[in-house]
Image (cartoon, rainbow, N blue to C red; front, top):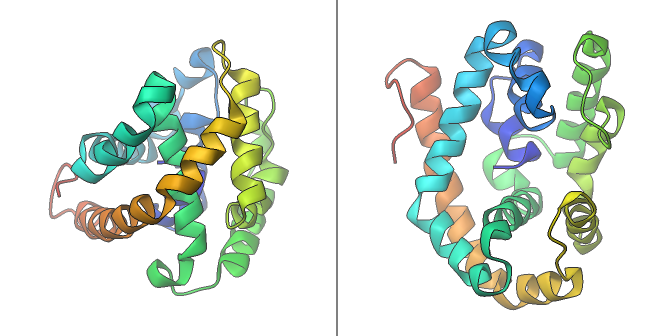
Length: 199
């Protein structure tokens, strides 16, 4: 899952939100300190990713992009899923996306994030506002351009957007079913009813 989904699925406490997000926002050397500094958020993040990567609907979405983009397909689908989450936000969360983004921005501002420096290209100040941008096609395009700028193997952003638009209705339908399942599984995990996320 991508940033917005991890925030939605996390306990709404600064320690959990920051610890959950930084797994994807640090470079490899920095990540070594996460299990020690943020053990519970680290475990939750990994459980969410494992649930997602192994889910049939996520795999089905990835298969649509595999012929053209191969190993980048799961990365693309993570972005597209965040787009569909932003688009259908109030179906899953009881506040608006703009309010949620504002609340996250306050948490990131007030948390001592200077002790958690992010890898190049990311900042705590810009993270929450980007959640709202995911609602729009321009936000998806910007995210793909960012990935392409960091990827060793360049890809065609116009082609990725073309495929995204072509498969969007089916992928969105699969996402909505998938996210209902991962919300339920995450709630059971956070309540201590299960030790791993299960569909």
